[in-house]
Image (cartoon, rainbow, N blue to C red):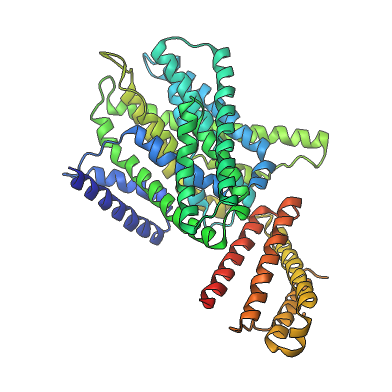
Length: 535
């Protein structure tokens, strides 16, 4: 039994990898391609029926996916967008859940308002993986990507809390709006605090205890599960716990990890999240026949009509909310001045259209209990599941496949690209200037008698001239490397100097954190190259 299940899992992972390669060849985002492939595979005669335990999705898949997204999200960018993220992550989730609750009650005979909120809580959060994978490789404003990623970190938690209270109302038959509101803030706030507390402990361990690359990587793999399980044990939001802890560790990663640990953990997490997300998206397609076979009260045709109407509703609701909030920000800007940032109409449309549903909606739908109490089935369980799957598939395929042509049609460009290029040149200029000052101050003797030291100094001098020329304020000499220990020591010391400067820039927020992280990654690779030659 164990061998057959293991073989099935390994086969699925192989199929996921091959399908992703094919999707890349066809230039189709892998979440969309895997969902469609899963549907097609499920219709092949003899395909084994795969039933997924919702607890596995919540416990095994959700924490690492959320943690990885939080670790990649620059904290400063998240904080800058906090108001817009809150409007989408909390406001839009509650608005969507409420509209869907009343719509489904009016649309589906016998459907109660509590069941409507269960459905609304399930389908209200868009999926970050789907949006970012679709936008990957497209020249879209970085602020839009940051907003979508930040939204997904928050809306997963808020939607699951709405879902949890609605589920309780269905099971108990009672609902108190005031108590639910109070409980929401307690559950959300305590979840975030638990995540921050655990992250602080992990930070101290990394900072003050001797660790290795393997131990550092192991800690990052264990951390999201600890954060999630501890928060859930105290009946708080495990999702917000993981998100808060991940953002904390992301901000302090430059102090916690060595260059080797950063390179290793980045590679491990990239592979892990790819396999986990791929597994979930192909399961979305594979689950459809199982759900259809369990219908009792509705025909597939009726359920499909309900699903399509509700899919259209969630798309329209998001568009209305995003444009309305943008209009309000525009009015505020006219009153309070330029400090209020208002995105362009094209950026607004892109944010409004990127509402693909995915992993969290699947997990929440599958987690609906089979029975209210002994002998009493949960009403409309499989209809809710079917509608959820229709919403996921429609939003993924319709919106996901049309984003790229719409960007080309509307000629949406990254308006901040020129600013980022200028900022990049300014950062190069300042780092090269600090490096040149350090060489002149500490290696005067070597500069007089050693050509490699002089060539290195000249390289930084030419880098300064090139940066100044590009900034509008002279070509660069090829880098010369020498195996001499002292020369290699100089290069390593310069790397350390640059890291300290980047830390200062992070503290005073002179440059964007995204750019700083890119430079830190370049320094990690450079240090790895130098130290590998030393061995």
